[in-house]
Image (cartoon, rainbow, N blue to C red; front, side, top):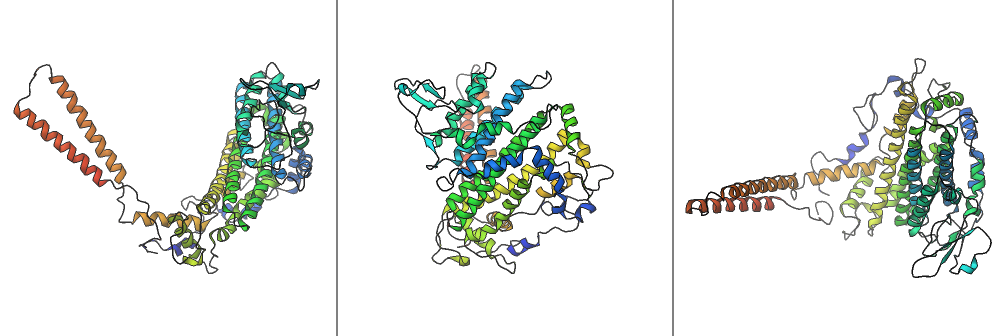
Length: 550
């Protein structure tokens, strides 16, 4: 490998937290009290707070549903599909709650728009999870209208130019009921069309009243999802209008965290079996789960401030712990959130297995150099002898997986940053700063989560030094593309200006003199030369195969 000045990979290990500055952004100062505290202790709520949170959102009942295995050996995806279906049913429950809300001051239209958007995100993610799931328990749809008896659990869809399709309809889900309400017909119909559209990539459909014009098998929705049990896990504090909102938002969060936990286990299994392609797919799904969680928590922005503050006081969301830390970061009371966050950080231990190179116990750059070589070769085999002791055979899916690892890291940081801003917007900046009796606020603890050092230092350093390699490469001219665009624009401006002057003078003179013709030819020649020079100066990026400096 060719070494350039200032590109010593060994310097990466010196990127540690020093003094009172953030490790990731060295210019970010931290308070002395925060720098001297155990951050893990700061984000750890008391057992009483955790228990109260779990009882409030009916987590014991939900966990019992998630852990019950109806198909223990026949359907491996049950552990992640079931909570995803539960979260979808929770959104339907929120839509019905908004439609039944009698408060004249709520923004019902915005609520419905947000919930419909959230349902679409969940459906899209669910369809990606079950994209190749051929083991799901389903029933076949019928192509004969004689199949429909007196039962109301079937719906007939007529497709032009073909026979009628008889689709099974869930008897317990709220969505078919919403589609039958006069005030909810439009949103119900849009959600049914969204199911038809998003489940197009899946080998089955849900059976919630969607057209199912392709006649795909129908999931045993009522048996798997048990919508009536999900509907029962609702209001905990009667008399508080925003109770159902706060409760359901955190139930949805817990459901998708359960999905993320299952996906992380699948990633580890795939990495151990050297299936980088499947691991990368699951890793991208984890990243999308974190983004879905951000959209879910954003629903709290629409709550009525006065109604929420009354509920907040009775829930003791801003009670101080024995450590003197304001625990207004209500999400941190979730065991699963902290568990999944830690599991996402622990993905870094899979990097040596993915790359095929053991990390140097002395802190050397062996792993980082192997990652740089992998990135530079695009995962293709370019060596007669494998460098750095890594396997000779690679596939681009290895790079896809490493990219997905860092995408998960970015999504985790984004979630905690957005939640910190949510605390400020919903509860006020006083919750952000803490009180006079509180040395460290929950916002400080949250900021430490997204200001932590890189989860994947070898990947971070490899990209840094790969950028330096191309910056010092003689094959490329820095800023060549922008220079080309600027010269091209200036040339075109002169041509347009000359053309407009010629057009304006065409009425006064019908014949050019020899001197004018020579001037125009000279100008045209000069412009052509500038365009050619600009084109030559622009050197397009070439795919440089092989190892660096090879």
